Every structure is written in structure tokens, then in C-alpha cells.
View (cartoon, rainbow, N blue to C red):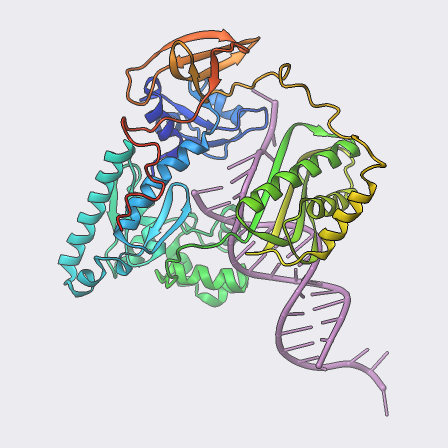
Length: 456
DNA sequence: TCTGGGGTCCTAGGACCC
DNA sequence: TCTGGGGTCCTAGGACCC
């Protein structure tokens, strides 16, 4: 999908169409997640600090992400891909590999001569792009080729709103002139290593030979880069991969300085991590603590338990123990808690059981120590995030344009309306409430994409 | 107003075992 | 009797991707 998050925002918010839109972290330490093509003209791109994006493109709309809406659109698009073949490998919400040979067109493609096969693939791809546009109002780009490597490269070339096919046999001719960074897996560090060895294009890599690349990059990476540079890629498309780890992390607006605060945050992160773990029906054996210090140096500490668990008390206590051992001098800007070595089920967890029994014994001795700083519901101030969906009792559906000094500004429009008008309310106006995202196409059922459309 | 959050894979050293 | 060789597991760090 092209500039996916920003494109969803423009589809959902008519007043933003044709204008620069930047989705990302809105706090002082946020970065750009996605910039619309209008914003990219100003030099804004993914992973750029938000502060820099604001300097480059001050008139853009800066929005927090709405992942429920992105997932909704993603489900629709992935559903279309699965009509082409059951063998679909999503890489993220907005990108996937499809193995056409494993689907209904596989036998036809296998029989067809070169030219007929090519015409069929192009027709399937254009139909797919048309279906995506019809069902979501968004554009996507397709790369078609004989391997994942070349399909990926072709799709990059196709962006935005395009289709590129690489004919079998043309791989090296297409790759050769490209900079080494075009190959997936070659980032800034590898690029530097290669540049110092005088290798700047993919053709240079192919000529260098495997031995030299292994020498420079290590066994696995060197061999992989050599394969790719010669246009070879045998990796299969793999569907339904189970996650191998679950983690949660937060960067704080201001560095944390004191130990007690760090320990409290670690416990809260562990609780969130456990919630995600349990929601996925998984349990894990290794608990990982991540700490990024004031100077951006990052360390991890981990502990492997006797068996997999999804018990909050066990995981929290382990994370806390790890946090007690790290040096926090100078301050901490990020904390994270993760669980790895995941299993599908929880074995009988004797340790967790023992902890619960112990907690029950001590329950009478330690009454109500927690929850001191929680404000009562009536006093808690609601946070209105730019981009957020809201509904007003009188004016209907809209989205938060901004808020401050006790006021919140809302634009009243829907994906299928004309650009709407703006009104301002008190932040605690009882007529205004957060709401779920609306479908991008009028009349689309709220359940669309949730497993229907696959046709039994 | 420098640098998110959620992941994957690889490497390397030490412990431990046979 | 100055000390092999292979394997696995754990830990920590780093590169990379979206």
C-alpha cells in the first residue's frame, strides 16, 4: 500500500486530501511513522524526528496513529490477496508476499508459455489493484517476479500506484546498476563496510564473489548478500508464522532519574506485556528487560525461567529483579519488557502457584498499599489526540484537529462527506466522546474483512 | 525540540555435557 | 601427565525491517 497510514487518514478525512499529512509520535520525542507524498516533497520521511518534520513542513497535518482503522483496511486488502492464493505472507499491515503458483491460477501459469503467463500475471495484478481501490479507496503497488527478492524490488519501483514485472532471466540486469542499499538486509552499517571495500553497486557485489563478502560481512549475511546480488533467491513464501516474542516499550517525555519510579514503570510495562501475551494465548520462558539511557546507549538483561509462563506475578517479579541490577546513573529515556521463547500453552507452573499461595498468606498483613496516585474517574482529564475519532451528540462524527488550554477543536466530516467544518469545545464537554473508526466506504458493514468474503 | 515501537535474525563467548 | 572436539543452552549486543 502506498504511504499507507497517511493514505488511510486522507481517505477518512476529506479535508486532508491533496495536503501534506504526517502520522507519527506527537510527543517531544516522537518520530515520523508515515508521510503522505505531499509531505515527502518537503523532505519528510519515515523515522525522521517529528521536530525536524515540523520544521520542514510546518503546515502539514500532524496526526497520531489510529491502528484500529489501519488494521480494518489491512484485513480487507489481505482478504483480496488470499483470493489469489492461500499462500500469503504478510510482512506488516500494508505489505505481503503472495505465491501465485500455490493458488487457483497456479496450474494455468505452469502450463502457459512465457508470453501468455506474463499477460495473465499482469491482468491479475491490475485486477487486484482495481479491487483494492474499489473496496478501500486507496492505491497499492504490485511487484511481480519469480522470487520474493525480485518481487519486493519490483514493488518498490512500482510505487506509487504502479505495477512492475521482472521477467525471469532479467534479474541481474535489473539489479546490477542499483546501489547496494536497494537489497533488503543491507542497511547503513553494511553499506559503509561495503563502501570501504570499494563496493557500491549490486553488480560490484556479484563480481566480488562469495568468499570476499563472507570475509566482510560474516558467514550468513555474506552468503545471503552474494545470493541476492546474483539474482538468486529460493526462499519460499511462508504463511501463518507464529510470533517468536512479545514486547512492550515506552520512551518517556523526560528521562527517569529515580530507582523507585523506574521499578514502578517496569512493573506497569510487564503487566501490559502479559496482557498481550495472554490475549495471544501464548506463554514464554525468557523475560527480557530493555533500558535505553540518557545517552541513547541501550542494554538488555534477560532471565530464562524453568518453564513457560503467562503469570503476571512471575513475569513482573522477574522484570523487576532485572531492573534492580542495572545502573541508571544519568537517567533512563526508555524502558521495555518482553517475553521470548514462546510456547503455545502454559505448562503447569509450580513457581507461579507457589507465588500465589505466598501472596494469599501475606494478604492480611499488607492491606491496600497500591493505587495512591490514581485520580477518581470524575477528575481524570480526558486526552484528545490529533486525528482521533470522536462523536458529538449534536454534530455527529468528526475527528480531533487539536487541543490545548482546556479546549478541543473538532472537524466534522466523514470518509464519504464533503470537507467539514471546525468547531471548538471545552475538553470536558459531556456531549463529546471518543468513537470507533468509520469504514472508508459508505455502507461497508462494520464486520467486513473479519473473515467474510472468503467464500466457503 | 535528536533519534518510536514492534519485531526478526545473526554472532560470539561462556557454561556445561558427553 | 599443559589440557580434544562437538554439541546445546543462555546471555548480550547489533543490524535490519516496516
